[in-house]
Length: 325
Image (spheres, rainbow, N blue to C red):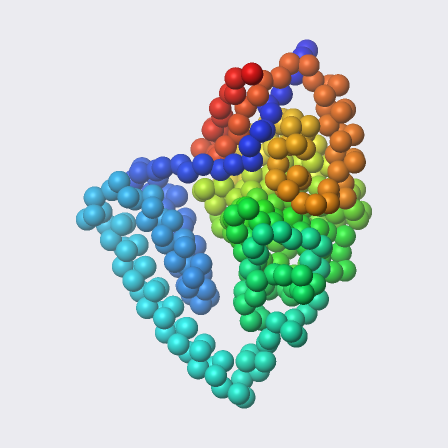
């Protein structure tokens, strides 16, 4: 039986509009925002509140949920201003150890393998824009990759590397844990028996492999993750549920579990994905990826070209069939 293959030509995410019928989604964002505010992370809390409010733009201004979220936004903004004022006073205090955290004394947890465009690093140490004088970044940095930019980092004392491109924001607070807020990423390891904890705004998934592996991931508009296996066999685990991925398979990690799996064409990814083509040097696994794409092409005869966009549920995706020229 001939297999049908979906081809990803654009690694993109499109906005999905929801109305008041999506109150459960709004409640999830609201709960996450409250949790972050209790932890003192007011900036992230406001982002979740604004996202929740965005789902209610078509609702009446007198809607109870809309009024509650608008009220909480005002409250969190006030707390954020107070926290900033207190932090500035601490920084000006010469006896405060945090005032000594200059970028020149930053730890060497993350080695900058390559970068292009404009990449910013904030938190823990004084904010900087990555340039040729900077060789390392420390754990805990909030790294922001602006449009038409990218960065590749290797994690100290591990075999892990991560690439980020095009309006991405992420942080690595410790080895094997990647907190991705927005954007697209490629993570790989040449080591054996590695695991990665991948955290997005509304999804937390563990990826395990007993062999070298590589995968792409991106944050979807609903706060979940879009994951594509490139190399090796990867096991995904979350909330007692598990899924296995082999090269050329795509899956969405959603707040309530995993979607069904889909097949994508590796050879198309190799020439269209900015994560693979925008850097001066190809990724370390590129030769093996080429071999995998050739094996996949031999196994598959019938194809139709599509764009796989965002996710609408565990069984529904945004697909657009492209006309052959």
